[in-house]
Image 1 (cartoon, protein in one colour):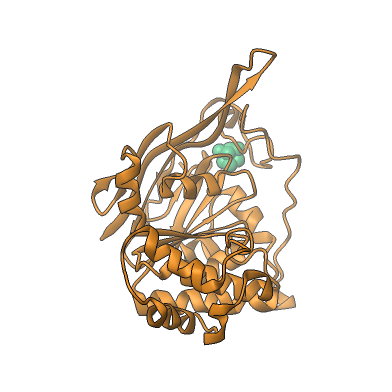
Image 2: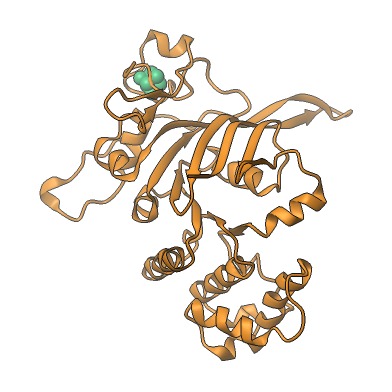
Length: 321
Ligand code: SF4
């Protein structure tokens, strides 16, 4: 059952210039993005920095107003709600940020940080300590955590506090925006395992945003690959990993280290830089870096098409259709 549906979502940021700061163009951060997320699943969103994945998370959260398109949560279009209704919605939709230190107020104790969440939303009153102590235990921290300040913790511990804050209001959906990319590799797997454990216990639905396909594959049921504001491939995580179709997906896959030296993948090094989202290439947006580009790729933008054998596997590439 779909808990979240994103329909033809667009987000264009105006670019201004000159002494009168006239609008000179747009940054096409998201351009016609559509997908659904089923209850209890994890949809991974992967792509290089600047591909629009964080903008997508922020549009779903209501932190950015979409230029066009819809965000439907539990059957309700939330993209046009006023701030009051958005506040109600935020009970059901929370975010875990990349940098836990920046998202925690350094002047507040952990107890105050966690209490604030309840108080802002008026969800609980009275003594919150038992509830907050339970939250802290649930994310693997000791009870004395509550009297300390954010600077007294390691990066991994701070991210655990961020996770405790995100689950405090018992949301159904959590957007994880690069939640482990600022952490040491040894800590990353512990945080990923904690997220998976909480999902199993609490029935959470995740949108997991990362630039690292190996991390996304570890936690996701399905994966959407983004390039320059568009989804170029979306499929079951195993299909992306074992049978990825889009040339950009192949390049991302080739950069994942393989532990077995016998089955080492050939590394595909993409030529050139990621083009500007202010002035994306005509036709397929990947055509400036794709070794398989043909004439049609410079003229016509490919749509997402279903794979004939697997309707859940969609790819936007002229080579396949
Ligand atoms: Fe490459 Fe053409 Fe496919 Fe784009 S449509 S990924 S340029 S082959």
